[in-house]
Amino acid sequence: MSGHPSIRARHAQNNIEATETLGPEATARLRAAVAPETWRRIEEASRLEWLPVELDIEVLEVGSRVFGVENNHARVRAGLKRTIEGPLLKALLEGAANLFGIRPSSLFRFSPLAWPAVFRDCGRFGVDQSEPGRMVFGCREAPEVFFAHPSYLEGTAAALGAVMEICRVEGKVELLAVDRAAGTFGFVATWVEIA
Image (cartoon, rainbow, N blue to C red; front, side):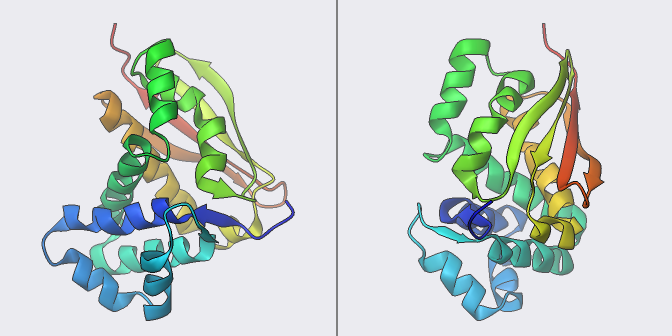
């Protein structure tokens, strides 16, 4: 990796906007707890701007303190759903749907293309195993910042659960393995296949 680990501003903004799913006063509570400079940088960024990933990490960690881990994971899942269904990743979603149908295996198969649309200088994403109802995928050459904030990796697993919602299936995504020394982390997604 040559540059600073970054996140597309639109995704960080979607994560903040998804706070409304936790109730009418949730956004105000989150805003009051996040450093004002962090909030301003995310809020004022142009949609396609790259922001330091640490800003999104801060919002995730503060969100867990304010709302509790489970509610915060629901918030980031709603944020990723907005990103997948919005202009940033919509073309990939439609391509996967046209080629393979709206199934978790289809969408996760496209994760190596989606990852660099959302993250820059944050490693290479790939699929390691795929079988009906189960997929193992993850990141290699991941930046140290992810390992310094394990709650961000747990939050990423929770956010990836948005794929299950989009596909309207029962399933989950869990953090499978983290190897800081090797710079890798992985996820396992499991779901019930619909014939």
